[in-house]
Image 1 (cartoon, one colour):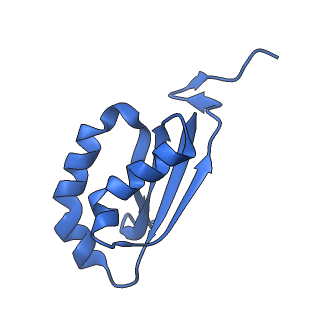
Image 2: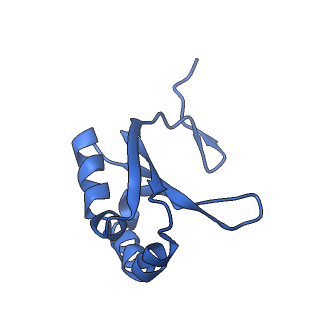
Length: 101
């Protein structure tokens, strides 16, 4: 069952985000099989908006919580807020995943 994980960075933490980014990307690469989607939130002009979004394909909320706790961004103390929400995969990559009507 997929879970959506949304994060918000602490104020004035861009330097911490940048200094931790390489190990964060390594973590994502190692866990790519769990990721349906993942990326930073941006402002309309493309600047970093201070947070991210992950959609992870795991079996339980506990697994989603464990995933985000292992993220180097979390371990570095980057996030002010983390919200985890169970997510229904309705459409992904242009394909319908809903059951037949």
